[in-house]
Image (cartoon, rainbow, N blue to C red; front, top):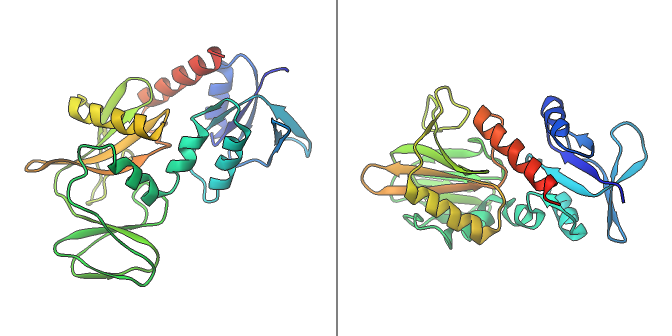
Amino acid sequence: MDERILLVGFDAPDAATLAARLPFECVAHDMLPKIVVERGQLFARSPDSARYLRVSRVVFHGIFEHDLDFLAGLALWGGPCFPNPVAMMDCRLRVPCLVRALRHTRFAGAPRGFATTYGEYAADGESVAKWGNWHCGENKERFTGTWVAKEPTLFEPFVEGEAVRLVIVDEPRQIRMTGPGWLKSVHGAGAEFVPADPALVEDTRAIQRGLGLDVIANDYIVSPTSGPYLLEVNHIPSLTCLPELWADYLRVVTRWVGGR
């Protein structure tokens, strides 16, 4: 069959940049398209009409509110998809992903807590509550005392230190994250690359292997007294925030398509 690549989750300019590097026709959707898996083949709705087009490869990027079933559909199809849809599916939900990652990290640190809806969690020091499945600082709050969960919530101690992200798209890169408050981000003014800590590289690679992720970005707090503490795993890291990361990604995807 003729090759046709489905690009999912890229803004139009980024999709155009990526498509220009690939040797086959590309069908691009910035949001989740309608798909059908039929007799081992994948069909995606055309962005320009109501007809469905057979696609032979998928490049997926982004996090969407209801994307878990879409990822399951890609995994059920079983065709070439970057990143690996089974790993993306396994890591889509925040708490299950972290629980899996804790089996592979050296930097689990102090135990986490958890409460289902209406459960009361009594913290023994300053702590952080995290709920939901969004990233980029969403749904996180510092507190002391007792927290009544409005929905299933993860709890961890608040750790003072430097916030860093260890990203592996091609070669490992470490980013010092910044922000005006206690929530730091790669999108903060002044975020920059710093020399990669070999221990964090080793730890991130161990988690990457354990979770089967093609790309990964681990967020750590590096305490001056107790060392690194794993905060969370990003299975779809932000790649357009720094041009070097975007260049890494374009190179890796181009190589993946060319390696068919």
